[in-house]
Image 1: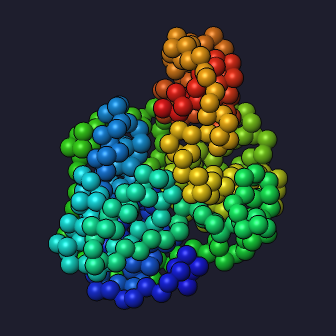
Image 2: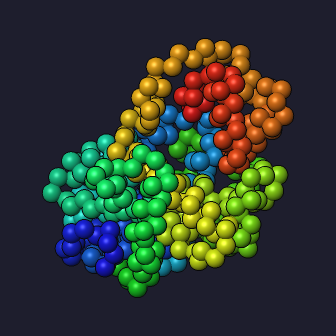
Length: 368
């Protein structure tokens, strides 16, 4: 039994596994617990109209990446005799409605740490009424209050957090969930097709320039390629013109690969040490967000910086957005972002710093 299951889950006749930021069939905490503790499990995804409606560009690369990843997920489920039911609307309406229609006794999903998602999940749980709502740790190795300082409070500085993380970690936390042995519990359904991008208000073609392979297969391809280069990662990642990074940030964001798989690599070089440190940074920021949800609402971590009066010259901001600052590295970075939807990690740091410290533009303008 994995440590993410705090309370034993009773057996259910029928359950739903609600996919969100975890678009894969391997090493998936919620799916594992659903399949293990249910006779029949229906797999569901919701294109959330509250999120989609806030996206101004209807050729959004994120939406297209999700769509292609869902298509692969659906194909794999169909190969197993099941399928993915993809809905479009408000989760707090659609998940309870489908749960009542299918007469399920429980809904399983993986925990999200962003305030809007927490609020959404609370509304879903309320609308489910007597139907059980189970959530599990899956996005991170250590979540929320699993790593605390000697006073029982969350860390505010990375290095002490990292040291505590490394002190606590052992092979158990990297263990993959053995989902495959429970695939027989997947609901036997007729094959379903995904709603088209057009039917949910979006256009295809946004991923073409970036050539980002989507889905679990795409994530594994990128990871296997990165493992051939991981020993040089510490130094190579500093040079944007060099193929030195993993290119897995999008896949981690949407869970097409497990964080446990990425973190479980042997630490036998400075490159692999740096790689693990970057993944610990990710845990650190998720921990900060869970303890300081105001960070997602446009507030600075250090509260004294909330009162900075930025000049915010619109002409300078436009030049930054449109790669017209006259600084070659900054403009090259912004062209990469505008044309492909991706920006190299080191360039992200440089352009963000340039926006705030050189152009004196509010960082929240850049975030938007």
